[in-house]
Length: 111
Image (cartoon, rainbow, N blue to C red; front, side):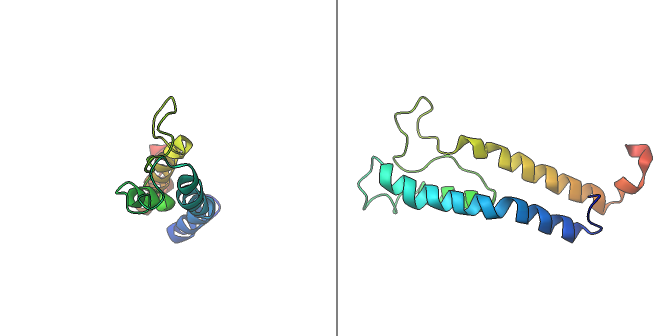
């Protein structure tokens, strides 16, 4: 929060940091990787109830399962486990914004 003076500016910079990489990665994983390597028949893949929740990963609500993908891995069915830290990162950003909005950064005694 040192570089920007407003919470809106901070939020904009955080969105510009995460979304341009996260959204294409999730879309490519869903529609290219998943469609190519799923164990399901290709006609069943788009209709699976697992597909829609995975797409929410593109906005930070991370899910790890794609229908029929990586079912024989050591951790079966998990796609992009490294995205697990995104939720924590976004939570920290929200915590920083909440802290700044109530003015705690202006009170050095709290820190």
